[in-house]
Amino acid sequence: MRWIFNVKDPGSRLMHWRLKLGEYDFEVVHEADKLDTNADALSRMYVITRAQQRELTASNVAEQESAGEDKIDPSTEEIPVILKGNQRAPFTGHPGSQRLYQKLKMEYYWEDMGGDVEDYVAV
Image (tube, rainbow, N blue to C red; front, side, top):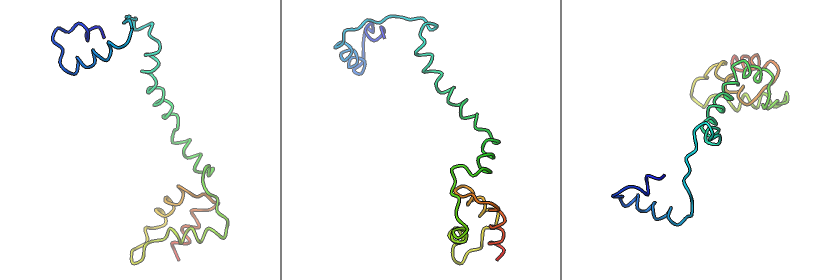
C-alpha cells in the first residue's frame, strides 16, 4: 500500500488510485502474519468448504437413495403414469430398464421400483 504513494513515475491508473485513496484519512500499519487472524480465516474458508463437501461420501449417497430422502413417493395409481411419462420418444428404441431406472430414481422412490421398471420395459 505504501508503494502506491512512493512510486516516482506513476502511470494513469496508479495516479487515479492515488487520488482516490488521498480522499481518505488512514494510516497503513504492518501486522505480522501470525497476528492477522482475519486474513487467515478468510484464506482457509475454501479449504474448510472442500473438506465439508468430501464428507458426503458414496455410502451417504447410497443411504439417502435407498431411504428415498427428498424424493417423491408416488401412489400405486401414479406409478404407471410416471413410467409412461418417461417412456421413449415415438419411433425410437427404448433405452432399457437400467437407464429408465437410473433416470427415475433421481426424482422418485417406491418399494420394488426396479421390478416395476423391468416389468414395464418387458411389456
